[in-house]
Amino acid sequence: MTLIPKSHPRLNSLLIREKLVKGFDDNLVAKEGLLAHGRGEAFDYLIGEKTSKSAKEAIKAAAFMLKNAENSVISVNGNFAALCPIEIVQLAKTTNSKIEVNLFYSSEKRKKAITKILRKSGAEEILGLNKKSSTKLLGIDSARRIVDKNGIFSADVVLVPLEDGDRTIALKKAKKKIITFDLNPLSRTAQTANITIVDNVTRAMKLLVIESKKKKRKLSKYDNKKNLKVSIIEIKKNLERRANNA
View (cartoon, one colour):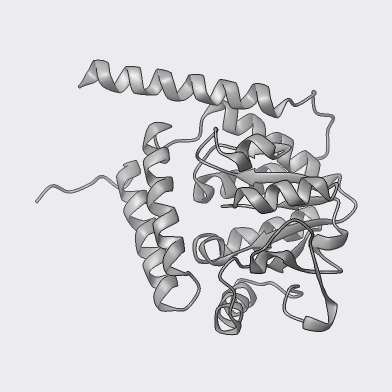
C-alpha cells in the first residue's frame, strides 16, 4: 500500500471528499452537491491543487471589498457549510458580514442541519430562516430566489461560493457586487462576478480569513477579466509542466 504524505494535495482532496460524504449523511449536502464537487475536483487538478498567484490577488481584492462594504453578506449552501463552517464564521466576524442560508435544493431539514453546524462553529445571527423576513429575487426560478430582506436582498456585497450562474447574473442585475469561488475560470459565474477566486474553497477561505484580519490599506485597481485571463494562462503552464514531466 502506498502512503500519501501529509502535505500532499491528494490527501487534502480525499479529506474534502470525506467531509462532503459526512455532510450528505448529516443532511447538509444534497446529492447533487456531491456531483458538483466531482466536477470541481477535475478543475482543481488542472490548476495544480494549489493557490495560484492570480487567486491570491483575487483574495486580497475580496478581503478589501468585504471590509469596505456597507452591508456585506456571506451566502451559505450545503457544500460550503460542510467544508468551511469555522472559516465562514471567522470571515463574518472579521469583515462584519452577515450570514444567510440560501439553498438550490431547499428543505427545512437541510436548513436546520446547516444552522446547527454554523452555530456550533460560533455563529450567532443566521439569516434566511424566517419566512416573515423573506422576499424574492427577480430573474431566478429555483428556490434560491427566496432571500432575506435584511440580508442578500439589501446587501451591497455578496459572497456567493460554489455558485450557479443564474443567481450570479440575477444578483448583478440587482446591483450587487459579487465575490465568488469558482475553479472554472470560464464559467458564467466566474465571468459575471466582480471578483472571482479561482481556487479550492477550503484553501481560499483560510487565506481570505487571514487577509481580512490585516489592517485596511488602499488596493490597486483590480480587473476581474484580466485576472481570469491570467488564471487561464497559469492552468496552461501547469498542464504543459505536467505533460513534460510525464
